[in-house]
Image (tube, rainbow, N blue to C red):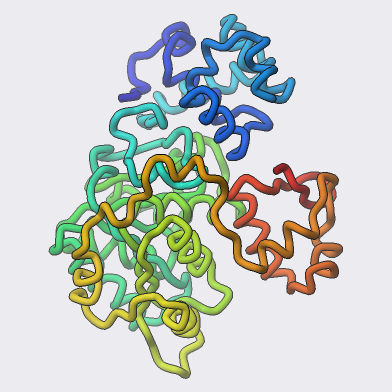
Length: 383
């Protein structure tokens, strides 16, 4: 297990935890490159023992190789090594624990998703990550009925032995966390910024409750601000930790639908609560049900679907070696329109015929799969 307490800079430079921290900060070391390294070496952590010639043979970028060599040689003046030491210092200051992909207690369900986080930052009871979980997500502007559904289902799931995992956002997320805690059950919150200053700020008190009686999780180091691109990345962790995902009130353009798509790519079950045909926040749930999500009216609908056992939802370890998840036609169209030089979003909208919001959703999904990246002037292919 990784721990930040009582570890000096010198010890960190000699530790596996420190090197995994470096890997999480490396430039030009995205999902596709990590997978290529894993296929060649077994796991990226073995890069610490590689010679310069081997690092070059693996196809790593010059900046990446330089940073690894600086770590190997204990060059604390190198900017990236300095950053890792600063992250370590901030974690100690804020009592933040570290979990790396090499740790024995890294949850198997998350380890086997596409692009698993190399490092997780934790506050609370880290043992909860290995417990059976079900995610609850939904609209930030939920109706009173939607908030009540989230609270009630969170409490009922706790009684069934399932931890509730969500994203601490306003609306459904917050109601789900509160419902579990008020019923006396732990909950896990995954956020899109540093744990030193949980976002949203209106949920600081709720975040404190989660830390006291559950677990707060992020893949971002302390000091990282909340940014729009962080939340879709956060959502893959929420679904990756969970046996399934329950969507409570979501519009047709809701970020919750991105989470549901990620869950399906990860082999998880998707559940949705139907609503009134006059409620625009029910349309996303109705669309999911049309696409095969399980219609949920009672907690028994969820429990019955999960009776086949968690093993049915966990991919075999080899599945991460088979390439990127199958893409929807919209993502294929966006990828075909991209080149290895930056393309602006306006040009991409023209080339694909997609509305701006649809384009951005597809770009985020492709970025999560390690196929594209943002660049000055737009987006470009990286694989």
